[in-house]
Image 1: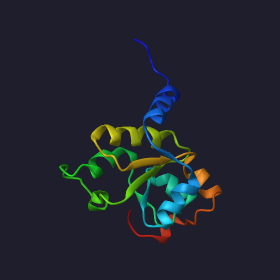
Image 2: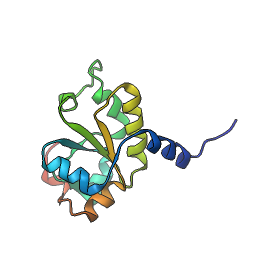
Image 3: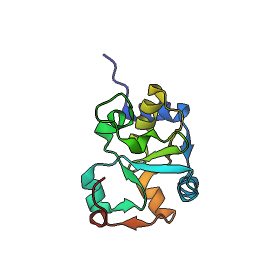
Length: 135
């Protein structure tokens, strides 16, 4: 059995998906062209806060919440007019998640190079997770 290192999987995914800079992602969100989707674990949101206006979708539920035929589908992920821009802490999980959604047939998907850390550095407004109810 040959194990493919996760870094190689991330590199492969990045060759097949759209990657946005943090500035481009924030600009698209601000212009109403994109919905930022935070796939970090709820504990990470509690520790580090969340990007204002981003929707939280835990990585473990992402495909289920996006799939319109799933009993877990969330209506927020049915907007065909805007791009969904995923991010995690540093960009590895979001690359793999973006690839999975692309493989499912979603074309309006991208992810943020550098993740939450890069968004924060680019000047994203960070709010305390307790300041917004629910996901």
